[in-house]
Image (tube, rainbow, N blue to C red):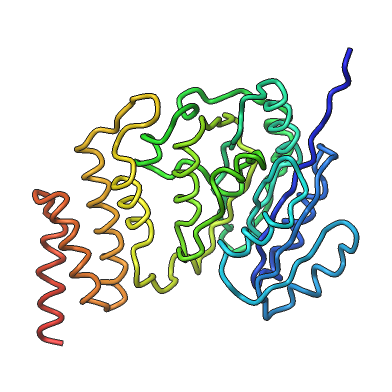
Length: 314
């Protein structure tokens, strides 16, 4: 009987000014029940105490330092340095269950045709004092299960058009697939992960595990952050539709009415954030795009009227 060969997994962590969270993230990665992995930290030009925090881990991690270039560039740097047969990603403020890698690797060992696998996750919010407490049962809740979510697995391009189903910190990708699909688009300041999953979904089936193995940290500052000048998620989605249409490789098609509503909502949400920030000219352009996609939706019309009024009488 042949011995099972457990592949080397490269875990890439882009790190930028994460002194307050990096210890929790790294401790969770180091405590994985799966043994054959390497941790690659890409310090993307941090200006806080991140570098000092990383120095404590010595031989447990590899650190690559670069000038600040954004999360897509940091992940690409990590991919270039990866020695593993598989590549996983973890953001520097998220936390993995100690069973995450073992569950995913065991699954792909039983199904060698898998090239990308992701899992469920918990949205992790702070308590009333702003403290992020790891649930006591987080590491025992699902243990080492690898039941596949059939509804969110397979040729899922058409599903991804309606929602970015994959959280980056949950993903594990075969290195040979990365060689085929290429790298993250560094021109995208956000939405680079969504773009990547869409590109992968045109090449291969994607598998999701039902169990939740990741805590996805929700920061208050992410809610109040100044919105981007470019609607990146809309740009990614529009580019995908123009390039590949509405059907996946298996012939399944997303409903045209649903996609119009999604495009309209992406524009309205983007416009609303700029409206709240007082950037009415950007809001107006996005509201007009929302109306083009769904003319009968009353909300964009109302905000367009108010935004025009505020701009005129500013």
